Length: 225
Image (cartoon, rainbow, N blue to C red; front, side, top):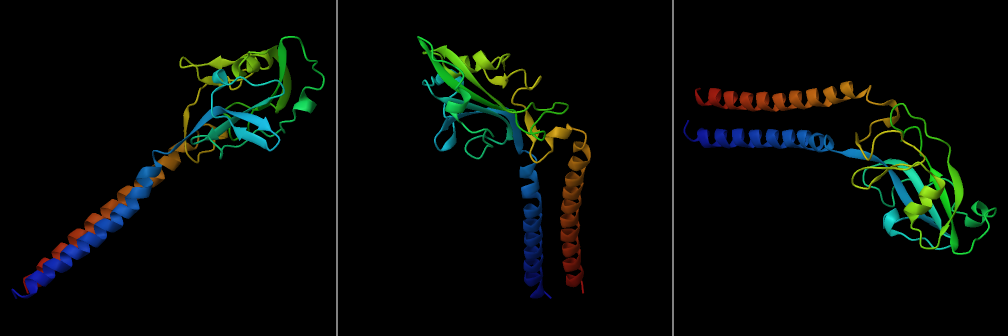
């Protein structure tokens, strides 16, 4: 009888360890996904012969040269960068600025605005069609001043983050949105989606506890025989 006890205890411990590992696997990814979020914002691009490249500096710190193309795209994205959708229209300076004559002490900068898709839009808003303009601005003007010349009104937050171009969107500024949600539909469908995973996690954790308790009871029963 005493010889069987260590083997029984080892079997119980192994069973509990297996169950706890399975429970951690079940709970881990779901817990991590609950913190994931996308953000709505205006992404900033520079155009060239090879298309669009993500700007590494903000508009206030970038001084485009004569003949440059600045691009803006409203997006719903986790963190921006090269994987963020690019502006749709091509960065074609010659086509955009062909009707704007050069001026003394001024430069011409083409500006492409892509307001994104309906899925990118905040609830209740419809993105305008993409458009392009040619800004004739003083030579020292930065990209923020270039944008203000052709796409007013602009809206900034207290931290100087660009929130709206040409009054789009009307509200909000870089707000987080649950990752994978359909932003165009607002928050109407989020309640049911949040409840399902939470209920599944509780049920899974409960099953792990019950199975572990059953293993302990079974081991004790064998020892009393």
